[in-house]
Length: 494
Ligand code: XMP
Image (cartoon, rainbow, N blue to C red; front, side):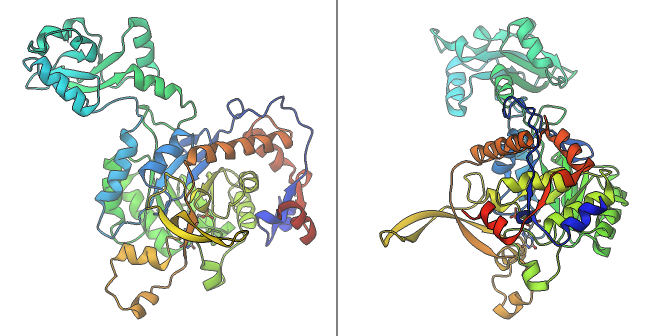
């Protein structure tokens, strides 16, 4: 490892290629190649991708897409200080989506008319109403099929499948159990009850099918998508954590620019004192001392990266930072797998993903690489662009991507629109705002990334990501080629 450290000192992604090895894979099929990796000590991902906690990258829509594709999204804390609810709402949206269990299914009472039931189904777009009494005890189930070819003046009671003929389940089922019950009992709806017979939730065959179509999705023990949320290390961070945990966020990320600091130490201590062993990721660090400092404080995952980010100007403005490959290799050597590392920042081309995963990352956090996709927050703005060939102006859709320490993001967070320019400048921005062309959904982009990681596994002579990482860590020199200026141009200038 010390040889690797001297080889990568001062280097980053575009400084290396890997030597192709004897390939043992017949096909580079992402659905058959294991890309499993740890995000943190208790959260495993089937796809090692994390969407960055940035206010132009990850809100609920992105977090849902990334979790459904096998990674995890971290909801940013870019809301104004004291405004905790908006971040909590994003977490709630993710936890209620694609969870397979409808927590608050639409209901109706048995004495309502079938016409009222039909109207409710039309209005809500659902095909099933759970029939309850005034204490929310389940009386039966009514579906669109029960309304066909009947006089809608009749009551719900006359057409529903009554309680005694219903198959129900008390409590939350284990993953897979609902599907087995539906298959065995030949039913399409499974109402879930509290022990006292009141309504807990509903599982439909449609939800079960949609789960099947997402075999890599990152889910919690109840089948709900997993999501993380970032907090700071000062101000409202503990109250924010309380509310996020009430919304059942899966992991809290204490995210500050310089995680090897007295501020971070205080924050971790206060967090652990208040919340015990809740899954906690902290960052960012980029040195052996920094990563050990966090690992020794019992965090469950560590974000590595000081200054490589696409929207980041820290290195320009302060001259501090560590080239990302150097940082990853050094942090890996210092922790030796004790705590999973999240390689955060600097990944632009897909080939850099596999570098981040081999040089030290267990997963890779992406910001700018996802910018401009449909699932990112923010408006699409049409901007005039001159086409060089014809010199004609066309209107092109753009979205904004910005560093979380950019002046614009700070201004939005602090509500300082009224401050005079000099005060705002004094905030010391370490990020920038840029416009990026709007593109389609993030899903095909992610799938392309996974395909390229699979191809890299094949070139690397392995059968899975874990196998490639093991081979690389046992003998990095077998893989690593340091590039010269001309070999870099030959490799990446296109
Ligand atoms: P990429 O390269 O994927 O990096 O866009 C995403 C990461 O960049 C970091 N980040 C910042 N760093 N000033 C910084 O120094 C900023 O304003 C800023 N905004 C984001 C962050 O770690 C993110 O995950």
